Image (cartoon, rainbow, N blue to C red; front, side, top):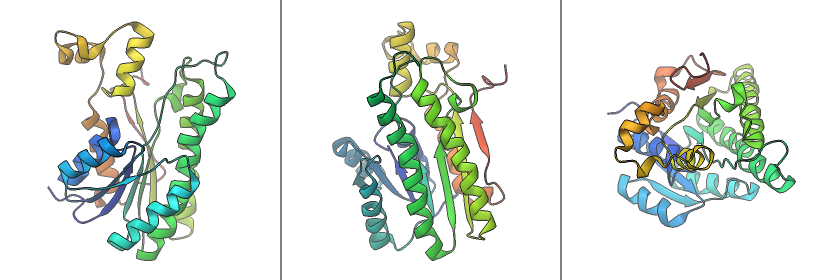
Amino acid sequence: MDRVIDKVIIVTGAASGLGLADANVLAREGAKVIMTDIDPEAGQAHADAIGAHFITQDVSEEASWAQVMDEVEKSFGRLDGLVNNAGIAPIATIESTTTEVWRRVLGIHLDATFWGCQSAIALMKKTGGGSIVNMSSTAALIGLGPYLAYSAAKGGIRSMTKSIAIHCRQEGLGIRCNSVHPGSISTPMVHKALKSLTGTDLMAEEDPEKTRLALGIGEPEDVANMVLYLLSDESKHVTGAEMVVDNGDTVI
């Protein structure tokens, strides 16, 4: 239970879904977890439950990143890991996506990942390195018709991650950067999409677990375990990789 013992790790969008699963697994494995989210009530409650530190943050606001990093440095003196997880996935095709939706999705995903990586690197350099995990999606690999902006943003995160990994290696910073690409995972975001696109209310099923398995939908911990690996020293030779967690959906 000590795969990331005493590592100081930030997880964004940590009040629910994949971010919450990441925070739970990392805390269980000994990390000093800083959870950030736009929802202070849920975020603080979950942080209290697992012994984590919570900071209210809108990742799409550039100034919020300096504030988070300042608080982390003052409270912990270092940063060893960052999980850029916060995201939204409004359903909209190329024909129905508005400029407002486009900019909002790219702001929360692409802009926030850029600012998060940039500010994390500046802090990690002070203590000799670290690991960054950027949450992408299988949408970055195959594209999803009903998710134009989301697919574009996740594709950008995939490429950005590789560029950052190359830079950090060439500069000898001791900082690794990898992306994780989940398929369908049982989170509130996916439940909402299922209900909207297919009419299936997973949580209202008589046996939600049986339905989840029948639909081939994974559990949040499936992704969190990959994140844990990438933040641990077990992955010290892994950087610039795209780690797919989709039960083979993109292979078939």
